Image (cartoon, rainbow, N blue to C red; front, side, top):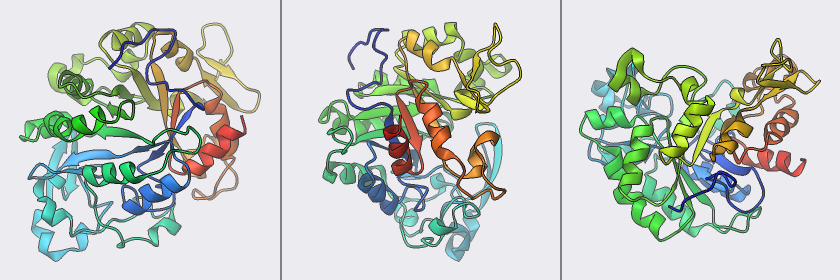
Length: 363
């Protein structure tokens, strides 16, 4: 990985900005992490594809939003796996269901995917039961076969999200080792195409230490603290908010992090009280929305900035952009998307990549 100067934040690439990343494929139209969702995202012009990576009992890397899979597969309806239902504590949260680490790949490959948000995305739910679970290597094959992205003229990039690395390491499935073995050679042969992201900085450092060529992006929530730091420091763990101060951003860049990826509500939200007053981080736009100074501060520290997740349904929009009362109704997504993009950030994750591309064209 090359060195970057603060004047050119890391994780940026030549071409239109922001980069449009298909979030788990075209997951607004097909069940997420399926071949259909990935192929549709490519057909719609996505410039990067983001999978979530977890592991099976026998060390296969599979693509699921979480290692608990009752909400995204038909496992709960499969009597042969009924005895696998159990309760686990994952990153401090107690969950009951079925977990990828209790299955071999041969077993998981028999499951079929389901829409994760059926109340919001009934059209996608019509495809429930059609598509199998995929492995990371299956997506890598699709990317190798894909044409260049129309908007950039470059090969479609892979944004690999590592999920629950500290937990998987604790049960003898070190994701850094497994991912390095699979993604390292792929990335070495395809310079500039890999971004690795995680909510845990530890695994990013481990993968970087293993020599995986990539841009490394740290995912940051609105509240709470990273699971790996909580495991190490308990209540004294540095919070996500602590990483987003000027000093925190500078520390991230100094540690080898190339960019940050944040909840969209940290960049744009309904205008808060005091926005625009001295000392406020928020600038009002006169239309009920306000933008924060986070992108400018991160760029000043030499970090690229991504945000998640652009979705058009009212349920996911700030109040000034909602239209009608239905949670599944599309609101004024164009205003919201373009307001986010005008902050100058470097990439957006979108469930409907075609809508994100339309918003970028409208800037």
